[in-house]
Length: 545
Image (cartoon, rainbow, N blue to C red; front, side, top):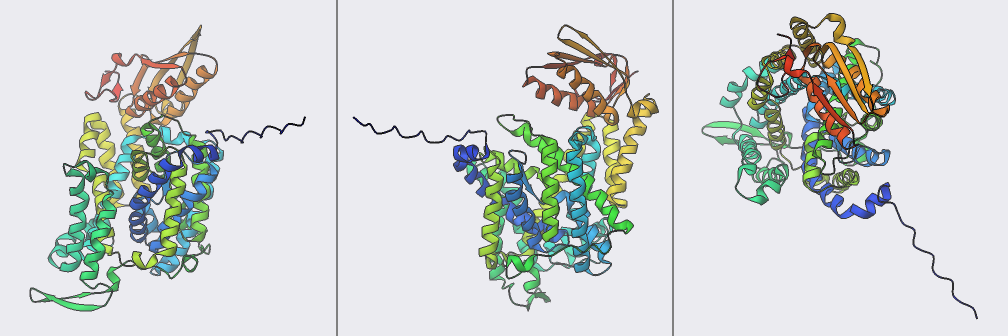
C-alpha cells in the first residue's frame, strides 16, 4: 500500500537574521518608520536649505541612509540622515568653494562629501570607532552649542521674512533687532505660529500631545496659512501703511522629478586647501557625532543591545559616498530621529528602511505638496533645534560637573563663533589638555599613561599612574579589555596613584561597566576617594590635592 509522503516542513527564518527580524517585527517597524518619516521629511528639507543645498538634497541623504544603510547592516535602531550639527560645515563649504556661485559651491561641496565618506570607510576598516569613546564631552557640547547659536542666528531672519546683510554669526545676531523692526508680517505669522507649536505642544497636559510629531503639526498648519496668504503668486500687500512683497520665493522649491534633481560632484577644486579643510571637518565632526549618537541610542534601546561602532561607521561612510555622489548632504546616525524611532516602538533596523522608503515614495509621487511648504515653517524647526542645542540648561549641566568643564565648554563655543568649527574644536581640546597639565598631569602622560596589571585567580587590577584623561583613555580601555579577554571576570581600575582623573574617563568607565555587566564581567573603580573632586557631581574630574 502506497502512502503519501509527509509534507516538507516550511523553511524557518531565524529571528536574528535580517529576514527573520522583518518577519517577526514588521508591524512595529513599519509604524515606527512611518512616524519617524513624518518627523524627518520637514527636517530634511530645512537642513538642506540651511546648508546651501537644494531641499531635495536632504531627502536624498535620508533615502540612501534608510534603504542602503539597512542592507549594509547599520546599528539596529539608529536613523541615518542629515543632521543640524553639520549645517555649519556644509554651508561653509558651499560658500567658500563657490566664491559667489552657490551652484558651483554645491557641486564642489559634494566632492568634499565623497572624499570625507571615503575617509570614514577607512576609519571603519581601521576600527576607529573607539575615537568616539575618548572625545571630551565638554568640547562636544561646546561645539553643538555653537552650532545651535549659528543655526538660530541665520534662521531667525528667514522666519521673519527678512534677508540680512551679515554673513557671520556675530553679525547675524546683531541684526536681529533690525529684522524684528522690518519683518514681513505674513511670513512672521507663519514663523511665530510654527515656533509656538514646537515649544507649546509638548507642554500640553495631554498624552496625545507628546506623541504627535510637532514638525508635522507645523506643516499641517503652515501650508493652509501659505495658501491663505497666496504665497504661490508674487504680489504686494499693505499692512499698517507699509507695503510688503510676497511670492513663491518664500516656498520650498523642488525639481519636477527625482532624476532631474540628481547632481554630480565637481572635483575641480579637490586639491585646494579650502577643500581639505572641509574634508577634515566633515570626516572628523561627522564621525564623532555619529559615534556619540549611536552610543546614546544604544543606551535608549530597551533591550540594551550594543552596536558595532566600527561597522556602523563603515556603513555611514559608504552611504555618505553614495549620497554625495548623487547630490545629497553628508549623513550621520541622527539622535533626535533615532530617539523618536525607539519611542515609537521600533524593534530592528527595518524601521530605518521603512523611514527611507516612505520618503522615497512621498517625494517621488507628491512633490507638488512639498512645494507648498513655507520656508518660515522650516526655519522655525531649525530655530527650535538650534535653541535646544544651545539651551541654558547645557551651561548649567556643564557647570554642575565642574568649573573646568565649563571653561572648556565656553572656550569651544566662543572660538567657534568667532572663527570656525575646526579651530573651535581644536582650541577646546588644547584648553582641556592645558587644564590637566595645570592640575598636575605630566605632558608625557597625556598621550601615554603608565599602566600595570595584576591578576589573581579571575580578578584583575589595572593601576593607572600619573593621569587618566581623555587623550590616553583608549590605552586605559584597551588594558581593561585585555584582562577580560584573558579570562578575568572581575576587573578593578585603581586610580589611587593617579594625579588627575578627568570627567571623560570616569564617564566612559561607567559606560564600559554597564556594557561588560551584560557579558557577565564586573568592572569597578577604586582610589578616587584619595583625590579631590572639582564639584559635588559623582563623575566630576578629580586631582591630587
